[in-house]
Image (cartoon, rainbow, N blue to C red; front, side, top):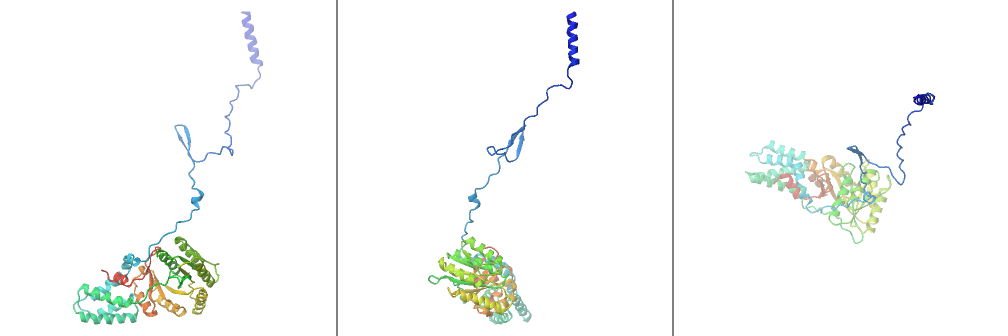
Length: 384
């Protein structure tokens, strides 16, 4: 009993004398994960939690450097043969109004003076030209008198024959692109800016490459950097070399270098895209004359193609006349023929200049430039 009391007394004294502030040992915070090192890179990519577990997704795959630097594949265009036949539907859509209007008028039982005035107006509206229109109307009137009663088939045949006569199928539309021995043929492309001159140069390169020819392009329109870049792109797509010079440089120098490159590469054809400034006739004459003279130190200029926009109508005719006075134009490339009902410019430009339409643009696609075929053109107007 005495011993128990003594133990309790000693325990109470210990509790009273114990230092204050001591409690349970502190809970240690979990150690922070070590920072990533070069040997252990940090994991990348989003995480998804599934049932309390964390899954790290792998980073997206990266293409090999060789794939990123891979050159674009060179395109192989279709050959020029039959191109206009393939594009006839586009031409027919734009010229349908002209053909349908003429057929309707000529099919009337009675063709009085008012009806002939309407026919004349329809032809003039199609940009056939006043003098040509009057000649056509006179021919048609004479033939209608001879025929008398006319069936729809006879009217269509009559109109087809007349239009074909006016389009002059007998003109030589050969594009001179064959080399002369070791020297390539040279095609000089001229025209005011905005007519599609540079695009036509690029598309012509595709036409020739499609026909198996080796082509060199000369970016002699040095006053527009965009024209040079555009021509370079056209050339790259078909594997044609493009010779260019500094912006604002001498166009004749670029043309000379392009022909020299054509000789060196044993090319078949060199296409030179020239500047299209038309500020004064004198300046234009001097510039184009110099380009042609410099080229002829190396090779013959075989073709001078004048690019005209079919939608400009008679304005295009005035441009054509100015260029015809400056250089010896050998052929016309008529662009945007699918976008206008004024296809009569084909007739008027040939009659005024005595130069054949050799190429026509029938759309915005890379292969929408075609050698002009008079019969396909007329058939698209009058329909089947």
